[in-house]
Image (cartoon, rainbow, N blue to C red):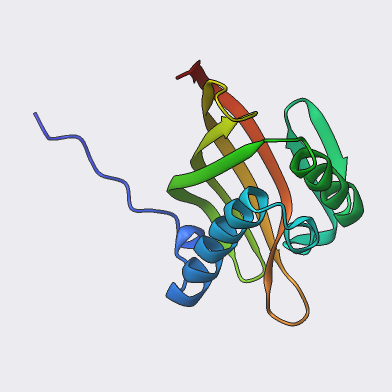
Amino acid sequence: MHPPSIQEPAATCLLPATDQAAIERLLTDFAWHADHGDASALGELFAPEGTLRVGGLDLSGRQAITDDCLRRAAQPGRRTRHVWSNLRIERALPSHIVATAVQVTYEQLGEGQAMQVRVNDMADTFVKDSDGRWLFASRRVERALAFTA
């Protein structure tokens, strides 16, 4: 009996280190800007026609994404921290990357309120713009687990 074979990753899943670092920075910047209510900077992480699906909302275009971040940040006493991990490149082409990651969101809606913790599965598609900058083409946030601490 032979041991199970280990499949080599598809050639399209190999990603240059500079692109990997750019994608990791994009994920980190998304979390930072969301946590600090920097709506315009968060919107700029998306391609002009980029989409974001989060919390049952389908947002299309930078302005809609920016407006949603502004709305969330305007909630009195709301504080969040987002932590991502487990980046998995599913497909990588020179100007198009498909990836998944896990994001933990800690949210407190006011001083003394219970903290909500959510573990989300992230499905992202990234595109490279004409300046060589990676942007979100689409981001889908799907809740996998949630609890109140």
